[in-house]
Length: 364
Image (cartoon, rainbow, N blue to C red; front, side):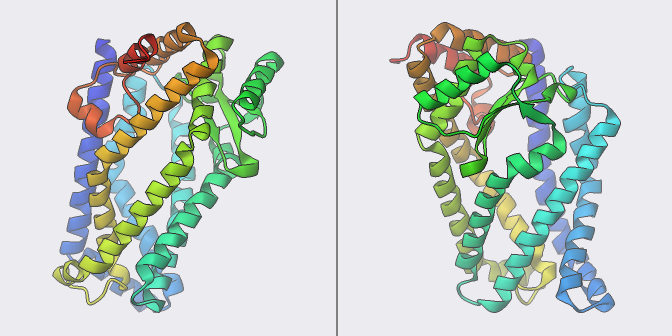
């Protein structure tokens, strides 16, 4: 318990420091004139936006990565090894970082490129058009994640335990969830943590079962885990999240459209359509992300609690749910009873002690 609490305290302290650091870097990048200087230097090399914008994103992104590296490296590598949660070697970690950076850069080229195209062609409706594009792109990305992105970081194959596979497929059928199949994923090459996921959209929808879960949990416990994941689908949580996130995206861009002229002028730009003004958009998004974080966490906890209730109703196996939660908390070093402020701001799942209490007293 003390170890889990220490791990939690360090993890969330780093998260808070990271948010403050991001806001600080964006402000300094804008106020110091570095963003404008970078854009002007690139325009001297070539005035073509097909060169200037990707080059600006690449250089600024690389500079951010270098400045953020000490915090990021400590949080994602040193901290995980300090608490014996990671099994990944340093070289493999760097390779994953390279892959993740290239993916992030590719996505940034598409989203930011679309933003500037729309900004320059639709003066009064750009905020709505780009919102719809970003929403569509995120849905497409969710469909591609299990077949394009996850295989870059993990190997997975159809589950070898046929009896467990049939049990999960039967559960999916019982809960009226259509899935492609059940796959086992080699989590153990990177972490001792356990997890299971229900990923993909439409024809790419599938169950991913971590080998760290499959090897240490009973079939009853695994069934409860998957019943919880299927419950999200049955309760239309994924659809609700898409609609909520879409609404937040539209509102965010509308507020940027209505209020950014003063901010842009404050930092010495004539228009948001200047490439050097991109950090203004990122500053808005960072601030909105912080403001919306507690609400997003609250809604997620509500969804998770409802999914727990449905999974218990379907499986009728309270003992398996409680034993699974105890194991998961110990294996993942979860803070079972966090400080109320930490729970309010960061916890997108109810703390484990609350979930066990609900299972024992479902009417409360």
